[in-house]
Image 1 (cartoon, rainbow, N blue to C red):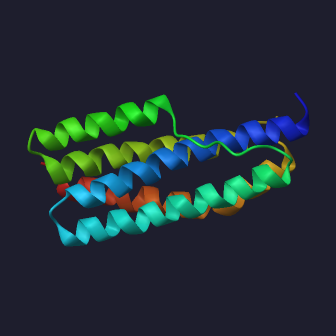
Image 2: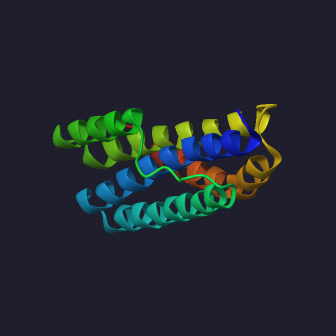
Length: 149
């Protein structure tokens, strides 16, 4: 695999996971009754959208084609969040699932940084975006702990 292909592949994996989060946050923002929580979800969906756009630009710069969809795991997680919300635990259900989505994205970012095969261009972009990923993760982790039944 060429460095160009490895960069594209690495960043596209992150794009798919970030897109999962963006879609899930957008949906959750429309479902929860709490205005402050809805606003938080909308704000974090915007951060995920920025991450997707930034990573997509890096993929294009490396000569690749950016991923256009999310992942199967993300779709299943979103479905599970809907089921929990339907069963009545709307706010906590979404927060718990969204926090898991944050765990997935943070782990993927960290794995990319610790992978010796990650090309320098991809590593630099991931390092630049990592603070945003960490901040969203911390916000949702703290929110989940504050809401624990």
